[in-house]
Image (cartoon, rainbow, N blue to C red):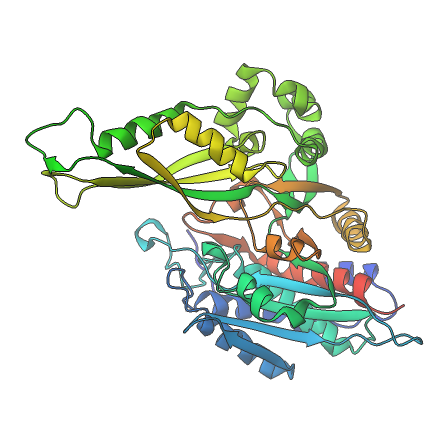
Length: 469
């Protein structure tokens, strides 16, 4: 594997940008060129959650804003849990009005990385064969730097804006966002008083053999994290009992494991599969186009689950058994044993009804279901000016269709959808299937081309949507 530190600007990036912009276009080459070194520096800041230490990331982003002369504010929701925001103010029209504001959001924290399984130091930001490696390269420090570079270029252009544009970096998304986006919504509600739109993680371009599709997340499955607490008589391991807390728990979990929740193809999922149908191989194309009917075929469902478990998970509620706790000693039968479930519900589901059904499945009055975390479902509409601008940019940059999608995982967008803010998962990157495997896995990386082209693409989007005509 060849390692190299230098990088270069992809041929045609600036020509493509200038061809797509009006006479107001400025030279954004310095902002494009600075994106890679700024991302390398950001990846080298340890913000692994737990514990987070996002204030380190705030300090780094603050230094970049200071260099650009951009005012910002920051706050800690708890010691070390930093959040930051900066604003480019809109210019009122003749009647003194501006349009609803746009927020550019990313999260500072990243998930842990086991260095023993990486080919480079996960916090190195090392460049290898045209890729930048590091935990958070895609999720979401890469997006945060691209947003920032486009934001700084927009500020430097001094063009009058039709709305306020916010740059926001938050803590704790990887653990639920309660020290980050959720905390800001609750404790700094004034920040979002005039916000109408938000761009966050959750969607990107994908490169298929048939071409590029740009996917924009408009809703997501709802997390319902649960703990099952089983109780029984404690005792010595040398004298097995008929029933214990552990055997109760194992029996209940096996019932959950064997349960296949009913297929339920919600309209947003059906539209997503239909949009992706032209990019599938011949064996899947017709099934994707008519997924509601194809999902009635148990053989097809099994094959889809084996080939693409993420796509299969969008067709029904799911529960994964992820954590188990029993005795602290091998020879002690514990009075209590517990397990944790990561359940994900489709956005049309009633969580309380699901809990009642799960209790019936477990069928044991000595197992108590405790709710750890749950969110409310919400969907963002696609008949908006911002969605049309994203579609226009996708067509001009890649000749790509824009496909509204449903995320199997969750992001911080739900906090803002609950406020009525139109929130889209969108990043200006195009990934081949192999490039996305490192997210929450080993050797997370993003290409230099994606970073540099991403700045140009995002700047075009910002000017199209926020510059006063």
